Image (cartoon, rainbow, N blue to C red):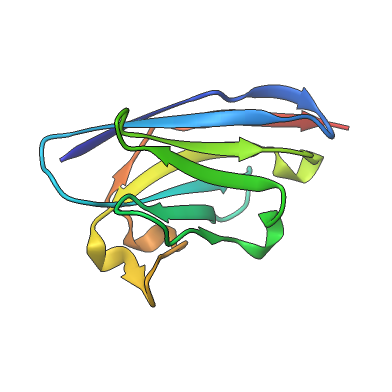
Length: 129
């Protein structure tokens, strides 16, 4: 069982930056895929970045490459999403998700929301023009 708590959302102007945090509490050992998703009103949930807690294996959606950076602090059981040069189209509810090794394909953690088991409550990001 894994519980996820996100924080760090807010409202910024276009070009601004935010850092989201996702802290995981779990009662099992082992490594997980951790991922960030976002969902805007009326749109499907979109995977933006994922990371394997065992080290390396970072994956980004093409739409965010170069602007969003996922990282982790295994001591704190926390995954971060650094977001720079934000655009109005980045406005969405951002969710953190966790899944086991079955979520990995080709050595990378999937960006499909269908395969993740554990979800946080979400944190809102609003970017104004």
